[in-house]
Length: 83
Image 1 (cartoon, helix red, strand yellow):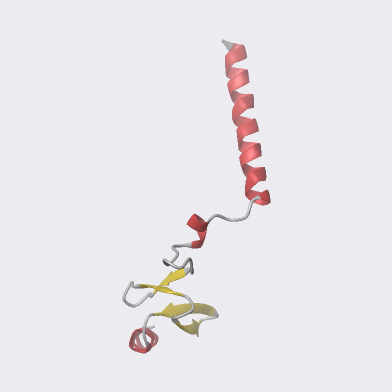
Image 2 (cartoon, rainbow, N blue to C red; image 1 turned 90 degrees about the vertical axis):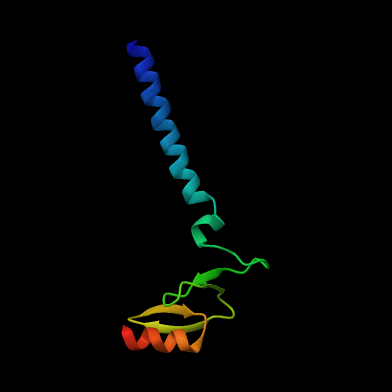
């Protein structure tokens, strides 16, 4: 019984080490990057209305050193007035 517990613990440690190593070696997946458009472009969420838009067509603004994307000039103006 003790051997089974030790084997299980060693297997879990080996699994954890391999998983951590793979995270450093492999590029990030698209699941961690966010949704993609039909053409494969990265999409971002407008913080004002919640609409997802491709980054190349979105209107961007820098707020407190962070780049924020909007679907329209109206959403951008409303967001900047309230924040």
